[in-house]
Image 1 (cartoon, helix red, strand yellow):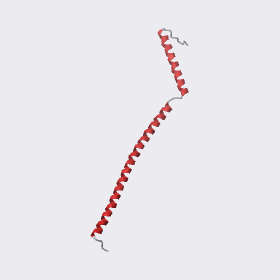
Image 2 (cartoon, helix red, strand yellow):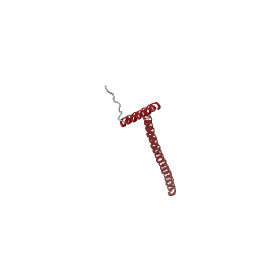
Image 3 (cartoon, rainbow, N blue to C red):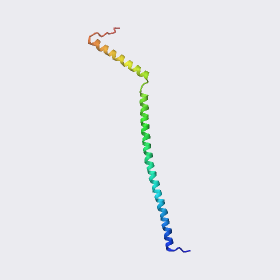
Image 4 (cartoon, helix red, strand yellow):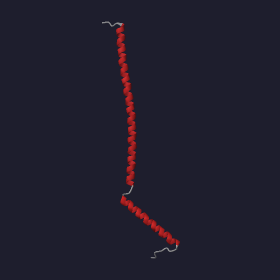
Length: 101
């Protein structure tokens, strides 16, 4: 069985067409894969930023005192301020009360 010259050229052309389609499909897949990688990278960056923000928020929440503790702290500061004021006034008028043992 002999193939004529034109027949073999047809076969070669078909083979090239299949290769071109295959390489084009491969290129498209690679492009999609790269786009997906970029999107995935962006998502991972966003997730890490969220994790950092969440951990910082958690740290701040643990550092912030509870409302009762906060009230006690404010009361203590006010009392210290009043005592400091009284002490300053007493010094001004030379009426410092000393405890004598």
